[in-house]
Length: 327
Image (cartoon, rainbow, N blue to C red; front, side):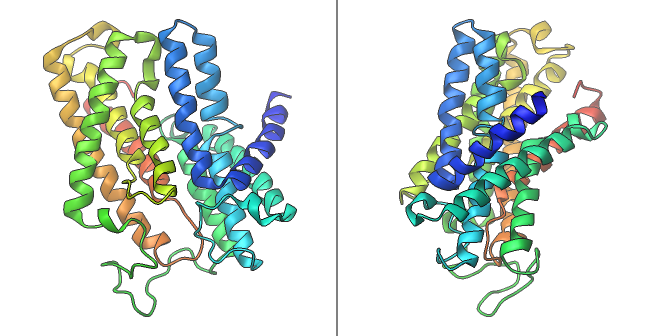
């Protein structure tokens, strides 16, 4: 019955994503995460867990529900001729006044939740990847096949140059598409996330494995600025994976079984923050590779940061396994 409750609730989350627009719905996740961190600091673990697990990453505003619902609704609206392009994840679709658009968002919200729950049941993999991010990717692919081009991977179109780039109208984020740009941005965003995540994890043990959500939440909020026309970089995949890697490897570098056992260790913190920078750069590269393969040549949105997050999360787990750490 709990699954049924969550599934029904996710219909509302998907509708919110369509009505507010996918990007604005995602930015709201960042604000909820700030509240979750605040609740943890205030010593209210129940409220913190509720905000983290059931609102920000659950059936209410979870990206696999609200953002994915907004993505699918945009694709459907474009197919019906209500919207210029299905790649428009910034426009609040309530302005169209089309109930069918909102209903598509609601249904894909429930679909995204069901996909994430299914991923969680996969032995080992389900507990060592980011099922929310993977559900976003899979939901976007389903929406592409239903409402967009008949192919997921579009090799080349007139006016494009293979994987090397596309014109301004079809690019993702023009000012972070070169290796010098996304690697530098990824490393420094990863460094930023790693630093704050390590401090949270070592000085506020109740945060536990959620320490990387603060920097991720900041990055999520900035998507609202990008949506409003400001040239804000897209960094949430970089901060998510950079912070996650730093916290995961911190006890390994400290030679301790857990972060709590390691305590505050400046030497280990230096090593972990550099690891976070490396993984942030990797996430930046993964996001750009995915957008060139699946987004830049398609007419619906399949999210590059979500791809980078689920692959990066799994990569961190595999690297920990290789060095004998606790994934």
